[in-house]
Amino acid sequence: MSSRVSALRSVRIERRLDIPRWLAWVVPVASLVLALIIAGVVLAATGHNPVSAYRQMFQAAVTAKGGLTATFVYSTPMLFTGLAAAIAFRMRTWNIGGEGQLYMGAVAASGAGLALASWPRPLLVLAMMVAGVAGGALWAVIPGILRAYFRTNEILVSLMLNYVAGYFMYYLIYDSTSYWRDLSTPSARVFPTGKNLAAAANWPVFTAGSFVLPFGFVVGAVLAIGLWFLVRSTRYGFEMRVIGDARAAAEYAGIRTKRKIVSVMAVSGLAAGLGGASQIGDFGHVLDPRGLQQAGYGYTGIVVGALALYNPLAVIISSLFIGALSNSGNALQGPSFPAGLVGTMQGIILFCVLGGEILTRYRVTRRLPGATTHLAARPPASEVPRDGVSATEVAR
Image (cartoon, rainbow, N blue to C red; front, side, top):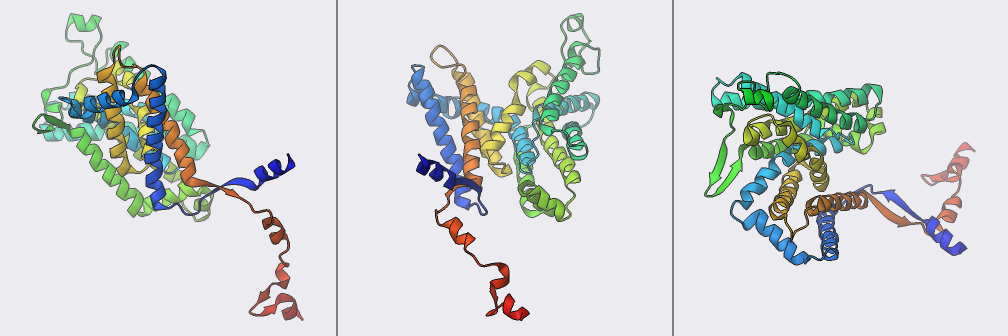
């Protein structure tokens, strides 16, 4: 028994000083494979053939008529919220408020689209994007300031602000006669709904045969490239990485961590707010509180960002994967397909990816029995030779 206890004591988890590049790519892939295996076990336990289910999901998401277009439609908001999570989490600043920041971006973008309906289409689309960026960024700055200067928990604050933003949307459409609510007809007064945007506010699309690519996805991809360049090739990104890896060392080196926390939260909210503008300009063309809340894009973005290991470029790929999963799950829901499979798989993927990240950053080591004795037997510093002469001899 004592030998087992001593063996356990000799095993410890320590942080990797240098993470191999191959490990950063292998771990996400292995995590996905493990998640698919676990989900397959769940399917088999509920009486479904995993191979058949995965084949049906692939067909619904890619090869079916309109399947690929629908996958990109689902992926577009997840791309923005995934970027919002990735850029903040990379600095170990836990912005869980992408949902609320997306709401505020949608509110601001729809307001701009309604107020500037007479503008030319290119300027109107640009104005909606700027308004969405401003709405999301300002909403994210609130938990950023509270975290940086008052040491509040940004997880709780940003999470609670999601509900505030949701209720604010509901107030604008259902509990007030705001500028966003349609009051033009008696039925609209009885059954609240938002004002429909003018045709000029509809964002353009790119078509190739039967495939339709939303303009918002292109904007999100450009944003991902820009954020990747920001993180990897600028002083701002270098300071972000230093703070994320060792905040105490960053403060000792003179990096202004408080300002950096606020600015990174603003950049994170910027991405989510632009996703809200995309929801209005690309798809809804009206402020729909219930539709936005039921979709839960902000929370799904956390899974997307974690799956990408907080790499903005990898967020593009992970958003397509989760978008395909959501698209196929919704398309196949019925008596022969579990309705809760999509949410279950997203949860399994999140846990597997987070577990894989732990293995990426840390490793299990075992201390040799004689290591402690060897260290204890080292001579004192005064007796260690320097240039062939010990310190004692120098003193003599």
